[in-house]
Every structure is written in C-alpha cells, then in structure tokens.
Image 1 (cartoon, helix red, strand yellow):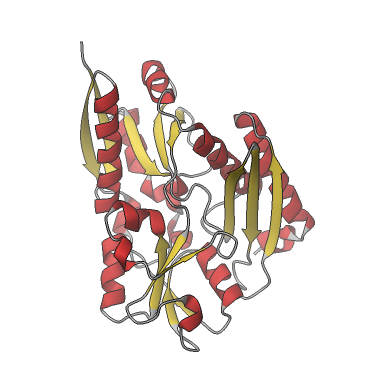
Image 2 (spheres, one colour):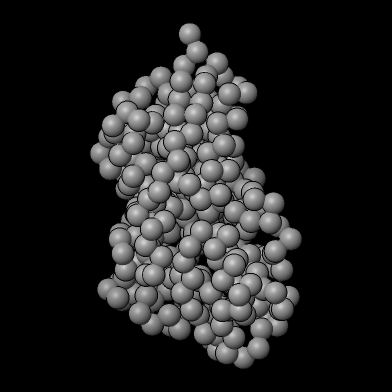
Length: 308
C-alpha cells in the first residue's frame, strides 16, 4: 500500500519550490504519495518590524509544527537557517539535505560590488548578522530594514528604496534568479548564518517509519556541518536578536568552523571571531565542535556583547 505524506510549507514562492523539490525527490525514490499543505505563518504576516522585535525566526515554523501535531501534515520543510536552535518537545530534524550555495549575494541595479557603493549608500537587510558584517567592511553605509519574501525584497530594491540589498544566494539560485546577483561574498568576508543554504526536514519525534525513510535521504556532510553551526548559537543562547554567524566546511576529513559575533546595539563595534576544526565523525562530535567555537568567542569577550 502506497504511503501518503503531507508536507506543511509556507506559501512563499521559495518555500513552495523547496517543498516541491522534496516532494518530487521522495516520490522518485520511494513508494509514497506526497501532497503539499500551504500555510501562512506569523512571520509572513508581520512585515513592519524586524524579526528580532516580534519573536524571532520561530514565527516561520510554529504554524507548520501545529499542523504536524494535529496530524494534518507529517513533514515540514524549512530553510534550515529559519529553524530555531531548540525545537519544541516532540519534534525533531529527521534529515538535512545537501546545501546549496551558502554565500550571501550582493544585489544592486547600479553597482557591481559592495566596494563600488558611494559613501553613505543605503543597503537593505533586516539581518543583524549581515548588518554587523557589512559595517565591518564599510562603516559609512546606512543600513535600512528590509522584510518580506524574496520577490517583495527585490521589488522594493527595484522601486528605488535602496542602493543595494543583501540576500541568500541559495534562494535566488533555486528560483532561477541568479542573474540578479551582482557579486557573491566569499564566506571569509561575510560568514553565513547557521544552516544557510540547506533544507531541514522536521517531523514528529514519534513518526518512526517516516524518520527511518527520511534518514535514507540525509546528506551526511551537510547534516554534520549544520549541527556544528547550530550548536554555536545554542551554546550562546542564540536567537535572531543575536548578530551571530557560523559556517562550517569540509576540508578533507576535517570540519572547519568559522564563527563571528557582533554587538546588537552597537553594530559598528569590532567583530569577535573564532575558527575551530575537528574530524566531527558523528552528530555529537559536530555539536561539540560548535560548542568549542562558542567557548572561543566567550574567551574573546562575548559576554559583553551578549549582554546587549
């Protein structure tokens, strides 16, 4: 008998693409029937304030988790960077799929790179992580809030509200909008958010058969890197009100993790940075690597930044 899986997803064009991508891959590989359940989340509805002021990225996942809890869906597909570091009791990340390009993208109708922007140029982003790193590169910039789905952000740029905006390259590439990218920030220059570019598949903890099925789709390098990155934030009490970046890459058998922390209320203050590495052979070791990066940030003075 063919099993049926309902995927809960946000209704933005990018979220539907991601859910559709998972649906098609599961149907192609397993004897399953898969449907999408589109939902509007509080994070999609509240666009006049930054996420840090209205409850954080969890606003993008709560309604989807409710659908799982009530049995209206069995699987939720998320951009991993939007998933809170600690899931509610009864839920788990069953798999992390292979990461797309994790870098941030510079998008502008008139300027080719960040360095070419005029003095005092207006750059749009509501990410504190991006804000502190942009100001570390260009202290003269004026950073202005930018909320909404990807298409909305691009429209606001095209309407002349900003000289440039910064977006995740993965979303632009997935929607066939790569031509809008004028330049990519290398990860050493602008460290991505934990989980950026990867898809996280969330299920109920008691969905044993589905967890076993999804485990076969897990991309182990991305899974371990994602857990290392998320552990940095978790160890520091992370939320979207913390300007924290964490990005891990495999260099041979070693997982190399870079992290940076900025000051939430004084974004022009110097960034604190840490780099650690280990073999990270399993999830516990990957988490330990992230926790070590958090220790290094604390040794560099993170306590004073976190107090903000």
